[in-house]
Image 1: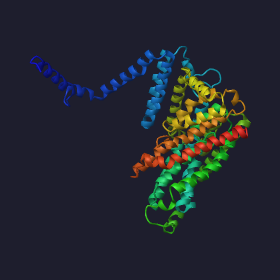
Image 2 (image 1 turned 45 degrees about the horizontal axis):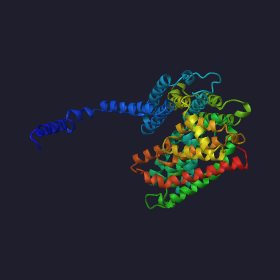
Image 3 (image 1 turned 60 degrees about the vertical axis):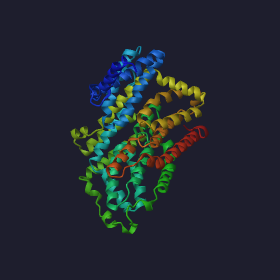
Image 4 (image 1 turned 90 degrees about the horizontal axis):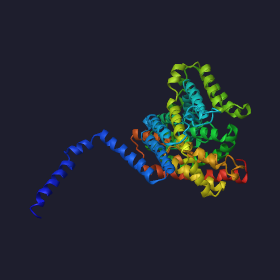
Length: 507
């Protein structure tokens, strides 16, 4: 090395030391969270917007941009579930501002104030009405102790025996999830499972995973049993009874099959953590439980049960009465408040406002995707791949909806795919089977959530509860035990719906 090069080499080393050593100013600046956030935003802006817009035709660049916002939003929601309202409203603000600036003739007023029929447009007011009404009904009913009463009765019937307790827990979770939101049902049933399992020294894992599977089945039981079923029913114009005619026979088969499968995966003799037998269970203690001890006023209890039954009857006869189920749900909620004499101020504070706000933001994001024609282009692509054949299109929707629901929550997946299914349903081959694709979408979303531990809110909650109990559930354990049954149910649902559509021709 020459003498002239030495000062330069030393200078370069000094610069390197100044920038990259642990105590350098540069490293200290980079370690600041705000600086990192600014760099991240700039990176997304440059590589996610500027470069795609320069390299890709403008129309497809816009589609990619809004599609990226939608996908990123629900990845963040899945990771930071406790901040979901903040995340989705920030995404809505960015989306609406971007749509006004980037989209020609963007009808922003349709987001909140749709013209014409109030049940059409970006904001699905019919869905929001059902969620609002059912929230009032459930909150007023739960205050009377009705659901706690049912749980204690179930425990006394099983007398604490392993397999009867598992079956009744599964069926009770299914029944509660057809009326309550899945997460609400899981919270109620999980508290009972933990109390019983801790008292009897049972492993709570099989009971909680069984409850997760039961909520998936309940999600497609009735027209109002889950948020995806409400959305699909509204979009497809499916009546309450018509929905039951399709779902009930399927459930009568798959519920016993699912219980049998879970019994094989979790043999009853392995569930007790200590060497106890059935005769070792303190049945006298279980039978001594008083279910009426959780009921403060029996008159309110019976009136709450009456309002719940009348609302269900209203759903059944909604087509005959020509009354939207959203109106019936709200009337049922009002009836429950009046009959049970609930404190309306406390009741309104406890309503599922987060669910309503979440759905409002979701509809805005999906509506903007429709405005960019990205969903229209995806529908055209599926039509082209299926070559206009309804059966092939059904297989594609089943695969896409189920596997995407395993990564994202099935609610945004269902909302995003509804316009695509509506477009595909205009195929000439769909004229004789108008509801085939709607049920394919619903069943795929319900069972697709079981393909990963984070595919549904119920499974995330179950894993969180087990972790707090000191029994963490790893990814492999979940996949080995629940993924096979999810895949089997997906195949069953595809075969069953295809049989109804193309052999019996009733959907």
